[in-house]
Structures are given as structure tokens and as C-alpha cells.
Length: 231
Image (cartoon, rainbow, N blue to C red; front, side):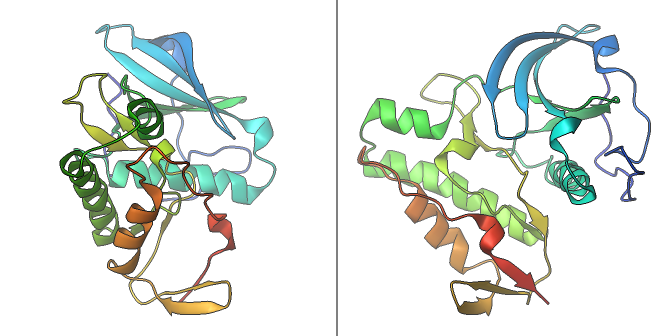
């Protein structure tokens, strides 16, 4: 299996390519199956490893949507961050990356239990004990991100997946497309307010504001790109 090391090279990609290294063709190693989901920049498919039969999810990003060098750098940063966090049990694990002239492919563990958002809507109500368990997992992910110098910037129920449909399913964070590396002491400014960004304020406020346990409509989330970080 193309189980690429988490210590991937931290170099800059060349023009027209996201990855700073060559990769095999995705379809040489995987059979691409049914569509699992559609995002703003990419489509996720089921894919099966030819040698082992293991099922994964593959997020395919068309390069035609990468309009400038910054877009290429954003995808490369997402890949680096996923490798950086890959050992955490509550983060969707990245298995490998592939690139050709048309697409960048991120092969990840597959989570068949659906989004936290959909489960909240379907369930209608969570008990305090159930909600506390979910929030504990979410806060743990955020704490791990912050301890490793990563800011997710897009925490919401749609970006947490259950690994299986059962009630005992493990909740995992996904979609690090807006995430960045940061340093303690950077200042976060938003709507005229500035304060130091550390691992205390957002991991509680962001979680409690995102996760509603009574079946009511969830809030709108501000565009994280409107946040300004500066040393």
C-alpha cells in the first residue's frame, strides 16, 4: 500500500504541480468507485486498493479550480497538516497522495457513518451525556491541533464524520482545507477585535456554538478567511 510517511518533505511545489515529488498514477493502485460526496473544491469517491482490497475514500481536486499559486499552496498545506495530525485517533487518517496533470488525489480512511450534522438532524435530540461525549471528542481534536501548531478554521458539525453507522461509532475530524500552521502569540483580529490566539478560547466557544443538541437549526459560520493572523 502507498502508506506515505508522515515525515513528508516540507518543500515548495513547482509551477503547475501541488506536490514537490512525483507520484504513481492513482488508478495503477486503486479502483475508483461510487461518489461519496461533493465539496466546494473536490469530489470524494470510494476507492479500493487493488493489492489488498481495502476500501478508502479518495478526495479528487481538479486543478482547473486552482486558479493561482496560492490555491496550489493551500492544497499542499492541507496535505502537510493531515500528515502532521495523522496519528490522532479522532482525525481522519490520510493514506497517501497522488497527482497527475488534471487532478490531485487525497486517499484517506473511509468513514461510513456520515456527518455529525446529519446525525444531529436525524436524531433530533441528544441527552446531556451523549452530547458531553461528542464535545469531549471535539475539544480533544482541537487541543491536539493547537498543541501541534495547527488551527482548523472550519470547525462545524459537517466536518466531523462517524467511522461507522452504529451508536458506538468513533467521531473523527476531517476537511483541513482551510487549516493553517500558526505560532503561539499570533494575534487574531475579527470585526475590529484583536486578541492573542492560543489553545484556550476557541476550543470551548467554537465547539459549544457549533454543536446544538436540541435539533434546532445550526448557526451560520463566518468566513474564516475574514480572520487576520499576524505575528
